[in-house]
Length: 367
Image (cartoon, rainbow, N blue to C red; front, side, top):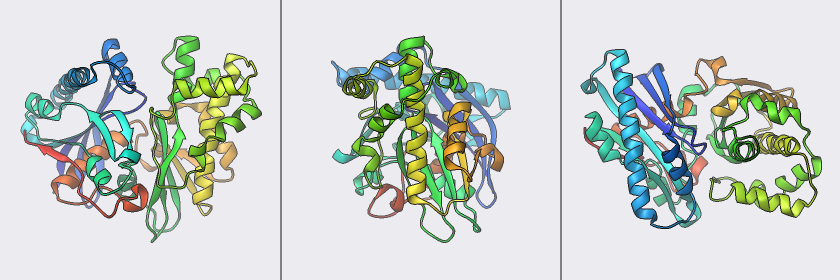
């Protein structure tokens, strides 16, 4: 028995909506059949970014932005199905993460918008969404959620593996043979790199890390950045734009006091990402043998180079080495989480999120 599922993921990088059309074989794995990234129109991108901070008339604006997000997603799904010659009734479900605009696990809530009822109406396919709430209700962080999928897909009975997803933020999954899975958000992934290059180069991201590679990381600045209390907090832990953002960076630079070339600051931010990931991994899994990278950061050649240098002699590869396209890992994960919900099976890992126990994640909107 196998099922068609569509995973929808829109992360903190705000670079677009990832759609992954999958074929799930519960005993044999999951196939990526087709995929597409839907870029945000400029107005929607700016509104989603603005909603991550307090502002005026937020409830109405969030409602309208969620509807626009759902309409964009629905149009993309229709195009994906047409390309593959599939009908809505052939799809078991859409697993829609939505767009996070606030994440406050310390207060017990996390907000993802995306109008799942509207998405179900437009697509005529049942939608599973709101994956984080139940874990939060059980005392967990509500994040990261992809480690359960990493375990199902990539666990090796012979050796300890690490899977590192580098999106706007970076999260680690540590897979040890016959031991509970652990994982956490290590800190910034691309978020500060994107903010700095957008401000000074008017580019959405640092392609292959070339701008960072043109500068030199400043050791004292990197030490100051890594001194932030978040990096010393024990797991379980998760973070977001509420904590690490352009304002956080400006405060750090003001405290540093020394004027540096803009490219050196970009290099220092890349070093922050690399060292916080590596430090988190080595502090938790000194027995690790293989490291697999996925997410947008997998395309940052300079970042991968630094991770290989810091983590040597560990082997650092992208998840392509184990047959999973690094660009679509998270979207595939939410297709799988939707299936878990519909099967009445848990989707969280308490050893990762800190929840009181395993919980079925997600709310279902019939098609």
